[in-house]
Image (tube, rainbow, N blue to C red; front, side, top):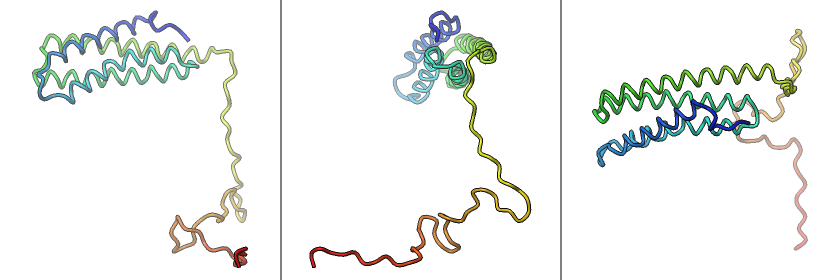
Length: 176
């Protein structure tokens, strides 16, 4: 676990989110509500996922949060382009934001690579994934798990069960 405030990429991502928040406040009050919402959420998600990943229990989980932050930079870039195409942000703001989002994404790729390399250096044993034994594939022998128990019979709906082979005795009633 590390303090996200010590990461330059978090500071840059946070600054971009604040800048985008200021820009979308200048969008017209009517229309573009979806774009405003998605752009603000995607931009804020970058720094939020970095921070959340810093509190992760493992390096592998931290790498997963970084991956989500990388995807949020791409989504933010898309929404910035959309806002520019709708003349909601200037050429200058568009160019600067796209450039900054690309730089943040590159920094995140580098951080993710470092975190994954640190995984290899981790002295703690990794839990092994349990794998089932493979059944025999010799002719004449059935594979494990090939029982028909619990399966629907041909012509029977999959959600229904076949009746028991022997009828059940009638329930006794104490009221009689």
